[in-house]
Image (cartoon, rainbow, N blue to C red; front, side):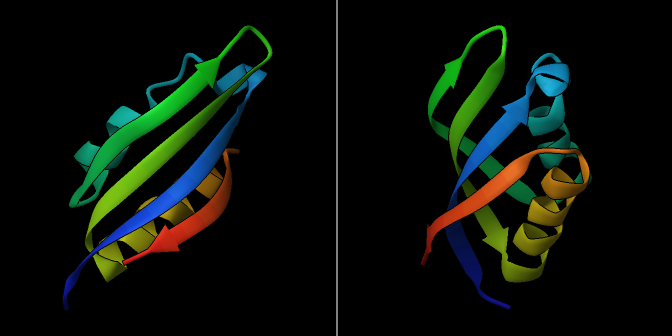
Length: 78
């Protein structure tokens, strides 16, 4: 499979802001998470994230985010 880059917006609920969710992406999956921008306060966190890796690993990483109660909105892939 070919490597891809997928850009997503992640919205973290209040109870997930302090969890090492993005750190775990690099540990659990063969992807490179690159934070392109972020806004975080006491109520929520919004992160513009680029994931780079094989398409199946990127898909698994996105599924992991969603099962971790993170809302994921796809921007583009390429």
